[in-house]
Amino acid sequence: MKRIRSCIICILILLLALPVLPVAAETEQAEDLTETFRFDFGSDPDAAKRILQERVHCFTFRENEAFTMTWDAEVRDARLCISWQEPPESVSVTQYAADGTALLTETLVPYPDSVIPLLREARSTVVQAGEDGMKVLFCAVYGPGELSEPYHEWQETPDHLDYLLISTHPDDDVLYLGSIVPTYGAEKGYVGTIVYVTCQNRVRADEAENGAWAMGLRYRPVFFGMPDINNSAPQEYKNAFRYSELLLNTVRIYRKVHPLVVFAQDLNGEYGHWQHKLTAKAAREAFSLAADPTFDPESYEQYGTWQVQKLYLHLYQKNKLTVDAHAPLSFFDGKDAFEVAREAYKKHVSQQRYYFKVRRDDGAYAFNRFGMAEGVVPVGNDVFDGIDERLLSNYVEPTPTPESTQEPTPTREPTPNLTPTAVPVTPAPTEDVQKTTPKPAAPGLRPLLWIGVVTAVTAAVVGVAAYFWKKRQLQKHPSDEKE
Image (tube, rainbow, N blue to C red; front, side, top):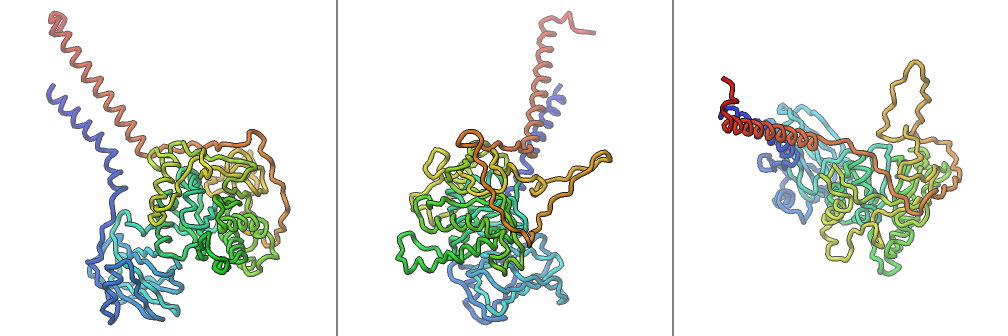
């Protein structure tokens, strides 16, 4: 009997340990390996200190200047992470084998941070500036695991998106549009990203990326780089923010990434911020212009035209839609979109001294209340209602049968000869405020493991209880015991 009980206890311990193992792997932080690599930044003695130790002062490399990193042994899944004072325009990275053979050369995309996977067979890397030079703020090497902020392993933004958020400032995407990415991106798996119109400050760029990552965004955000000008600034400073440039940038991003649904801010600027108003105006005007081949021939030549299917504006009073911010999200271990957005806003450290905060559907600036201002399909009850499902990124074409004939899948490629047609927005058919009907999310591995554990524990407890009950009955009635 003792051996049986010992076996039961061992089995229970093993079962209880199963859900713990994957969780530990998911949350393991990447080890900082910088000290095991040798860096050569040239003859300036201040370079190494500024690049490897400080995060305040950048070091400037002039045209075609470079720095080198070498190491002796294979390091698996290591990544070279570089923060730039200004996103580089023409920086190349070449990795070499121990015998000096060039293994890979790549030109970095101009983003605030670069994460460069190191090849296992490589033993040196050269980072070289182009004709515009480069300004390095910080540099480090990390092993496998989750990177420390501000580094994130973004997936490159594809050229066809399900949704696109247009945020005037870093943090507006959380305060006013923060229900979209957690609900539709992270939880439901729609493909999308965020555009930040104004961001010329390195700190705010880091906060934008950290906040977006915390909301579950995994596709690299886009920065227009336009000036962030205070609401109370004199008109002479406001003139530096040109609406014509904003509109052009918006049309071009529509044509480049082909979003089906766009979310932008309030036409009244939420609390009246003039840049918010212009961003919403540009998002709405670009809805038709992106489909007009006569507007901006340069981007038309490069990308063609594109017709966004729906444009939702924050707090718009027609064709209303309220995103369910109370539903538990399995991607975030049961937290709802409000909790996720509230935690993401904390990533905007520089903004915590202000009175702004994420407000739910009962607040004046509720982060989950929208209205469809433009559309070429009926509004429906949910964000993607009315859109041909074959255009969505998660569409899986059914296997054709001999008896059925499949219609050809519509192309998502831009159509150069598309002439925009004014299509009236269909009024909401039912109540004024429509709530979304969330799609059921597939259960993750962790809930299934816990269900297995609970079932096993319950069975073991019942078995042990039955054994001891039977034993007690035999003690009370020994005559009933078999020989």
